[in-house]
Length: 84
Length: 397
Ligand SMILES: Cc1ncc(COP(=O)(O)O)c(C=O)c1O
Image (cartoon, rainbow over all chains, first blue to last red; front, side, top):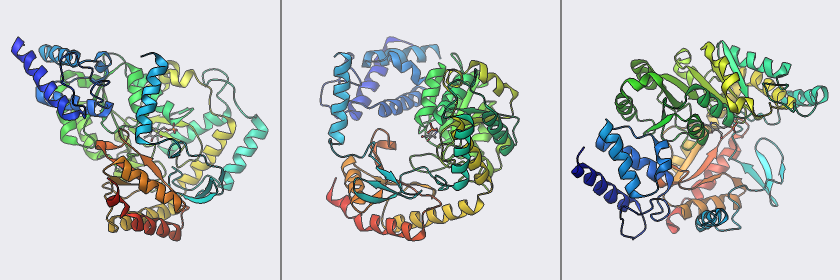
C-alpha cells in the first residue's frame, strides 16, 4: 500500500472519531483516543467493525491493547491492510 | 496520572452519571422474604431484577439437600477440582448434566463466569480466532482475552455481518471458535441459532453456546435454545451457570467431543480455584431435578413474561424484540432511566438500571426479570406502575 493509502486511512479515522467524540478538541495523529476524546470502549469497538468493512480486513480487537493514539490506530489498520 | 489518580478519574466519570447516594448499583438488600420479595431500606419491595427465573431460591428440596450436605461434608472443599475438591457430589452433578444434555462429558466449574473463561481459554489460544457476538457477556470477552486468540466481533444477531467476517478469515476458519448466547441478558432476545449452525457448518468452525439465561427457561425439559430449535447435536460446546434458574452458584460445560476432558488439565479457571462447596453442589443437584421436571414452572414463567411484555408495549415502552424473562425498557438517556428506576423503587418495585456503555447502542435500560413465582397480581401491579410512570420520560431528557 502506498503513502496515499496511509493518508486516506488517517483522514477516515479523524473524520469518524470527531463524529463519535463529544469533545471539541482538534484531532491530530497524536490525540489519545480514550483519554482525550472520551470515546468509550464500546464505541471504539464498533468503529473497528466499521473500519473492517471499509477496508475489507479483519482487525482483532485484542490488537487494540497497543493502541492509544490516532496514529497508532492508523498504523495498525495500515499494517493489516498491507498484509492482506 | 498515578494508579490511584486513574481510579479517581474513573470514579468521577461514574459519579457524573450517577450521583453518590443514589444506590442503584450494589443496592443493600436487608432481608429476603421469598423468591419475589425483599426489604430494601424500610421498604418491602417486589423483586423484578433477579435471575431467579424458576423461582426456586426457597425450594424445600434444595434447602434440605444443602443442609444435609453441610452436615455430612462440611462448609467447603478447601481445594481445587484438580486436587482434593472433587467429591462424590461434584462428579455426580457432572454425570447428571451429561445425561440432561445427552452428551458424553460435562465439567463443573466454580462459577458461570469461570465456565466461560475456562472453556474458551482451554479451546483456543494465540494464533486461533474467536468470532463473537458484539453483545456478548463480559465473561465471554474476558475468556477470549485470557486465551490470547484473535477476537473478531460480529454485529449482534446479524447473520449477514457474521458471514462477511467468516469469509474474511479465509483458511483461518479452521481454527475459529464461534460464540453466541441462547438469550442475551440485556434485551432478552435469542440468538438465530439455525442460521448460526448453518454458517458454522459451511465454514467448518466450532460453535460454543452460552445458555446462561435460557437454561430452565426454554424447551420442554429446560435445556435451553438447543431444545426449542432441535439443534442440540449441532452445537459443539454448551456452557451455562447455576446462578440463575438453578438458584445457587457455579457453572458447567457439556460436549460430545471427548476432548472436553482435556480442559481439566489445561484450563486455569478450572484448576486454580477451589471447587464449589458441598452445599452448593447439593442444592444445584436438587434444583436440576426440579428444572427437568419443571414444565409447569416454565408455563407459569412464560405467562408472566407475556403478561408484562404486552402491558409495557401497550403502555408505550420500547422493548427488546422477543418477550421473555428478561424484559428491558429501552430509553434514550441515563437521566430518564434513573428517574424511572427511582420512581419504581418508590412504588416498591426493584428492577435493574443499566447505563452506557453497558447498554447497547448508547441507550439506557430499565430492565425487569420475571420469574415463575410472581403472581399475576404482582405482574399486573408492576405493569400498571410502569405505565403510570411513562410520562416521566418526557419530563427528563
Ligand atoms: C451470559 C452470561 N454468561 C455467564 C454469566 C456468569 O455467570 P455466573 O454468575 O455464574 O458467574 C452470566 C451471568 O451474569 C451471563 O449473563
